[in-house]
Image (cartoon, rainbow, N blue to C red; front, side, top):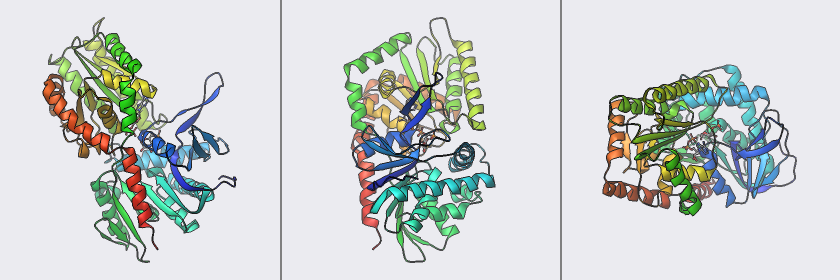
Length: 469
Ligand code: ADP
Ligand code: G6P
């Protein structure tokens, strides 16, 4: 909790702050950008709004006062190492994450994880309540903090409270597994507006509300027994598209893209995948498809190279550890079987990069492969489109991403259908330039117009309008 007397009119609350506190091997302490789409999307929003960002600084047992960084006012919330185990790695990332992503991995249910989730949500709610001025707007983010809206409303009925879920909300048949399903829905109903990525997510939430509470729903409106009304609907998130395009126009970054192709041996086609190393991203399906294409001689390593950026993520959770082993084994096998001295099949990179390097990689890539098995939005798909101001490049995009609702001229794939995925990869490689340009033009129109400023202003306008009298 913060003890400062500072109070602000706008507060964002998310599990993570936009920066992580890290200690290098030599003991040097520093801050680095924290991973994931939530931080990518919200950072530009906070840069243009005065306010405070409440979140965890990424390490256990860290006592920090609130501070300013890059024009942002940051309010750190302390988590003990036990809470990191139970609330973050346990309930958030080994219960809710797999449950909300169609049980791709089995969710684990443990009562002590739930108890830690409740206790930590209380701490975030208290931190937000103590920094929020009278009548302020508080915008709570994502699945780690679903109890915060109700806790905040009970402590501070003067506040206007928004909630945005960055990941899918599952169909009731899956959601109903959760032993604490009613408490979570009631937690979310504390908000004035509950936002989701896709209309299907909002519908799934409303169905859970109808099954588990006495509230009634009508289209996007929910009415509670006490007469209070709230809105639950889709607000698809986006990126700061113009800033990606600007980077892509920089001569040094264009030169870097050329250099990347040269370093890869100037293959005819560079394909790219960029994902947190997460089982939802379908990296294994992508590698299987590429491996089979090489085995069948439909593509050759002289002509086609795959660059796979697999960002380290949640490495103490078993399912993530196993995934890393599987992926690295598969990459090693494919490279061993098909690579030559001069040409590697897959260039595999397991670390973070500066934004400039990510943009150069997108510029260097003829084909971007997004094969997620389930993804709330997938900002990488939008970043690829924003970067390609030359109008070229092919986006292969899983229909199970939120982005597929918007990027309709991508090459849409069902990543479970390995033959279909292989055909789509070949189609992308062979696509005539005129067709590439036509498809990219339509996607660019969408991504440049519906950027993250549009997302946040739409949500916040509807939040302001929703305040009950
Ligand atoms: P998720 O939120 O599940 O991680 P998204 O695709 O929505 O997936 O967002 C991922 C964000 O993280 C994007 O902005 C992407 O550019 C960024 N990113 C992913 N991997 C790296 C990396 N290795 N270095 C730097 N940024 C990365
Ligand atoms: C997704 C989630 C975010 C999360 C990010 C990175 O984008 O929606 O809430 O912050 O992944 O995951 P991590 O567990 O490292 O915060």
